Length: 143
Image (tube, rainbow, N blue to C red; front, side, top):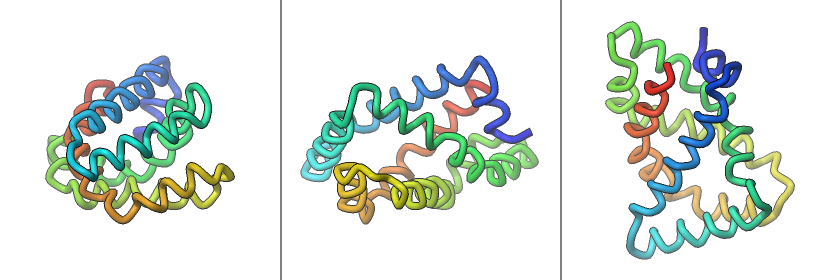
């Protein structure tokens, strides 16, 4: 049974989406400096696309993200601690997640979403890596 089966086909779905949105907000709040300002401005622009767009985007991305993380999560299960495994391999975890968003943004029809993503993509990996331990804990919360 993969992560998608555990989360997205159950009563946990709405809670997982909500927690992912809260994690995203917390990560953005922690950012400072010029890059923090740029990220917060980009988030505000995307959030302004329409009410609930962030939660919608998270809901659309999660099945593919979980599928991309399944092999690593299973490796971690075999080693006894999937949360630690994802955190220890945060670069690989971030690459798996970003491969999903890279593929998905190519299908996006809203210019503001695509343009914003493309402008920030070059600096995204360190930010995703920073969020991996908290994201892994979020997953573990519902397993």
